[in-house]
Length: 524
Image (cartoon, rainbow, N blue to C red; front, side, top):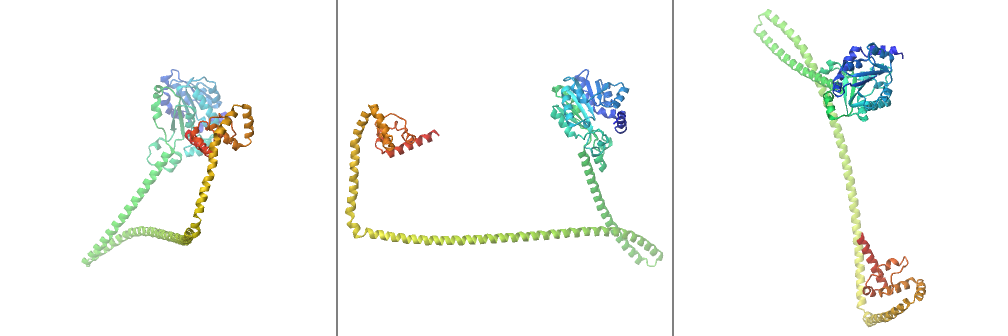
């Protein structure tokens, strides 16, 4: 694409220099407070083109310069001696120092850049701007359906439309303190119009939009810009769509009222016609002799009849239409009633089937319960008879002669068993002191003690009994035991000798296990 082609293209389709300059004055309320904060107000216009915005900035006291890639567009700046040079926007920003500019602007450059480079451009602008400095980016508004689907693609250098929500979020995400959306260039008369057409909805939304983003600064500085940031700008697509819907609703309501008025007028004409006919007939009877008057009245009657017939035909057509609509409504109502009755009948049948099934299940369960009850009664009767039989046998045995004869023998056997236990208890009581003295004597001879312990370990049960005996009498201190018996014997050394000496080894083992379980439960 040649440089002269693009300049001619801009001249034809974008608009004249005077028109563009007039449109850009909308940003003056935003940039005016910058002159109160910074004396020189250095500014950079990216993609300055013919220099309309550069000219506005310099007229308002800004030290502004511009850059543009298209040399053909820069010729317009050269003709007005505006400070502009050829260069690339992002690379130029990267060369600038931090907080060196009060204003950075870019009119219709965002849609020419890949989104990754646009992200870098916004980030570099935030770095270069002074506190409370402004970034202005303007772009075609894809919210306007004609612009988004047709006009945007007239420029062969456009990448893709950038919705205003995306560009405003980009400035916020990058770190700008606040931003303002300006919808621009909509027809002035459309903004105040109460009724809009469909074409207004398609092409009437603001064809361009601008994002004014401000860098963070103390509250006293940003307050100077609040009035400009609080104002609303332009026409949104949803606003026009709502106006269009409201207009359609009003038209439908007006048409309905006209129909009602036409029906009322038709009834009035019909009533007047019937009264006229009655009066005409009455006049003919009274003035039958006046032929001329009769002819006059006949002609008037014919004319009135003609007009009445026309009105009657209109009324008949309206009545026929209403009758047809009523029949359709009654047909739909009848069809709905039939469907409802069919559905109700089907649900009733399903409910009756479910009830019948539940009744059968209850009958089956009842029959099973009855059978189980009868079986339980038969079993109870059987065991009742069996118990009576056993009781009778026991009574027969207790009342038999052999039971009475063997009673002395049974008593003798019980006494003998009790006497058989006495020698073992007596022997234990006699042998315990002897065993204790023997163990004291062995404990005083370490070599003999070691040999006996080695031999006794081969008989664990006997070894444990002897060790418990020695512990209960204070003859043996705590010594390592086998893992099997160690839990049993833990705590025996601290147990009172008098309490455990009367228990058997098995009883002492159970006692220690219970004690250990109680201690573990207490620790938890």
